[in-house]
Image (cartoon, rainbow, N blue to C red; front, side, top):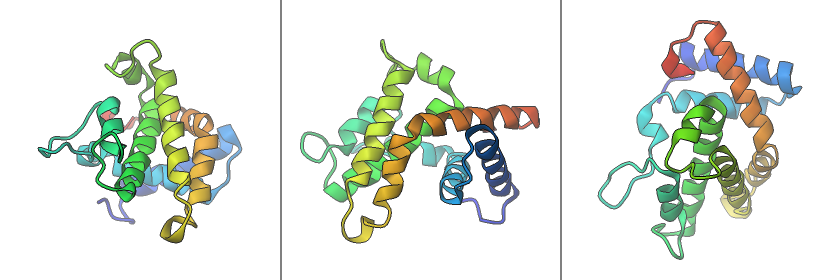
Length: 175
């Protein structure tokens, strides 16, 4: 995990905050912090592909992640695991669609729908996470409902973050 005081984390927090305020009119620290922390976390590839199969191999395809998230017809051992995996799927979809939409279009997941299917899956995953609204998840549930409802806006915000990082001369693996 990249420490709070690391320059990369600070760069992402500043860039997301400015881009979301400028291009989306969003001045919500909870949202911008979440998005910036997501960018920071996904700088480490092991975090981008943290969902694993039974053999410990990272799942790189969205369809495989969806099977891993299903506690009834898939591989999730519990509903808590479903929530954790669906949160990751939402994060992965938002990150991929916002930062690398051209890669989404080229992926095997793309099929006929491509980016539209990635957006649908991301929104649905955040919605499912929001439905875990009892006990320890009660306070987080409304936040994930907002992420689901505002998914396309946050995706657009990430495209602006990517452009800004490119303008600043950030290495290509960060944008």
